[in-house]
Image 1: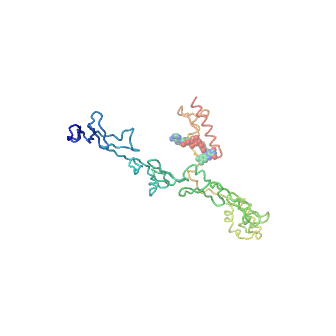
Image 2: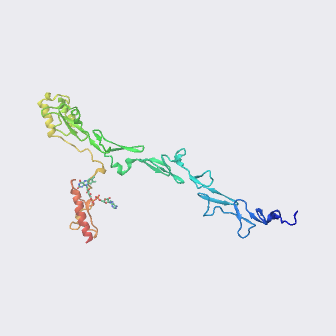
Image 3: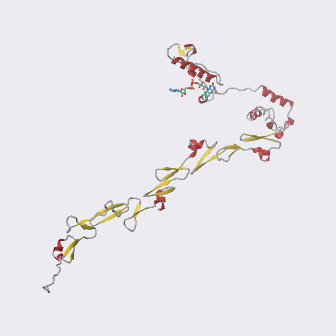
Amino acid sequence: MNDPKKCEDVNECVVHNGGCSHQCVNTEGSRYCACKPGYQVQHDDPNECEDIDECDDNSSPCSHECINSLGSFYCICPSGFRMKDDNTTCEDVNECLADGLGGCSHICHNTLGSFICDCPEGYVLVGNQTCRDINECLLNEYEGGCSDDCKNTVGSFVCSCPQGYALARDRRTCTDVDECHTKNGGCSHICSNTAGSFYCKCPVGHYLDEDFKNCLDDLLPKKMIPVFINLLKDKINPDKKVNEITRAERLELAALFKNFNLSVKKFRDIDEAIITCGGIDTREIYSNKMESKLVSGLYFAGEVIDVDAYTGGFNLQIAFSTGKLAGKSAAD
Ligand SMILES: Cc1cc2nc3c(=O)[nH]c(=O)nc-3n(C[C@H](O)[C@H](O)[C@H](O)COP(=O)(O)OP(=O)(O)OC[C@H]3O[C@@H](n4cnc5c(N)ncnc54)[C@H](O)[C@@H]3O)c2cc1C
């Protein structure tokens, strides 16, 4: 002290850092404690510093998750986000922009923090990422859509038609092609359109190509014509012109019409069978109630009974009638 009349400030910070745990700031006549960044002066002890919790719910600087540390903090981003340069804000990652559409086989939609895979029409998502072709031809709603043939293609399907039919505008339904519409179907005289086909006809008294093999259209069903021509081949040359056919040959043809013999070669497959012969003997059944005469309380109906008839509704009628009577009797 140079001037005994003047007071000089004492720097309390010199001795033991003024008692401050971090920094001591000298002031005229006093001092106070200050803290390093990330710390604050303790409420109950102004000499001590305590960590500031920057992640406190109300004041977190992070857009997403905040992790507090001694004197500092850091932000972290959830999956699907990345940290911006400010180190506090997370921004969405557009996974769909990455190579390979984020792993989606066809369509990728970015969402906040994630992405979803999608498929174009005609495909179905298998798992989360892969689209697989739908076989529309196996689906009921589409099977009904194609009136005839359905062919599956990748991502779609096409309907097709048998010969003589063409796809209508709906691309599903096969409609008959009227072959006679174009150049009279190539027929010299009359063209007659049929479902899926057509045939040429001649005016009465004229025959197509005038061969025997072509002149039976008016006399026989189509499928029977080759049968007749074959059976008569030793008697009438199929290529003989009709105006050369003799009376004797015409009589041969007439004779075959009048005496066309068919012999049964074998039964059709059991799967095609219509009615079962055999069953419960009708003499063992009370016909007024269809109850068994041998076992009381046992009723019979339909094919289980030894009754059978020609096809034409008789067997169904038997089943309906006996079924109703048996059911009614059993209930009484
Ligand atoms: C292809 C075909 C064409 C026919 N066309 C004609 C015709 O045009 N006109 C005509 O009159 N008749 C026709 N019939 C015959 C006629 O259909 C039968 O005579 C009649 O349906 C018999 O009736 P049902 O009730 O006795 O037997 P079904 O109609 O055979 O009925 C028996 C039922 O019992 C069921 N069943 C069998 N076992 C069991 C079991 N263990 N438990 C529970 N249920 C069982 C079967 O699934 C079936 O639904 C035809 C038959 C066939 C196969």
